[in-house]
Image 1 (tube, rainbow, N blue to C red):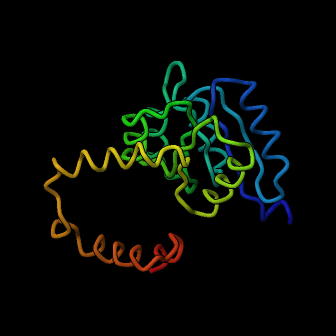
Image 2 (spheres, helix red, strand yellow):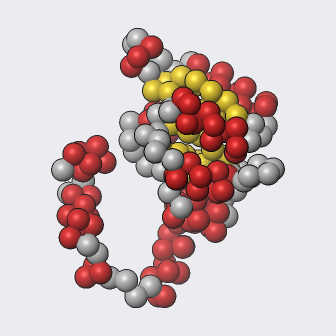
Image 3 (cartoon, rainbow, N blue to C red):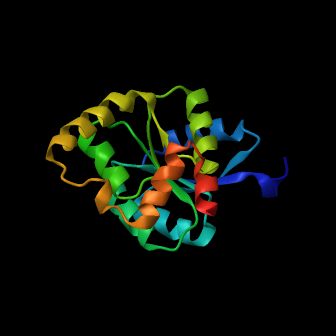
Amino acid sequence: MSQQERATILLIDDHPMLRTGVKQLISMAPDIQVIGEASNGAQGIELAESLDPDLILLDLNMPGMNGLETLDKLREKSLSGRVVVFSVSNHEEDVVTALKRGADGYLLKDMEPEDLLKALQQAAAGEMVLSEALTPVLAASLRANRATSDRDISQLTPRERDILKLIAQGLPNKMIARR
């Protein structure tokens, strides 16, 4: 696979040892490559704008501008890349808030290296990625919100209804985006 075909990744994490380890892990994959590293949110935003990576792996808990604030700022920019939160936190509030604010996935730092590589490849291909351990957390959140939510399908826009039908048919995100 040539350099042009490889998906590009920007790492934003305040721990240099973690960035180095993730970078070494990614270097073993022939189809993805790290093109930049940032130790804080402000630096990460600058690099994201100049490099426009396919994928941004973003730590949630950083000093200064935290991951959620960084995510908000990244979403204000016209970047083509996807943003996946990479955190030790499996708290419902953190997971749900990150996803609601536009994260394209949420991965826990305690996952197996092979699983992380697979998830990064899936995210770079346009899929939403979540650590398996988060399934019960999200299910509990959805269950709790169902009782208080008064939004139903009739409140969806026509485009949202079309997208929902395509999702129900099992179409991948890229196919849905093309329609």
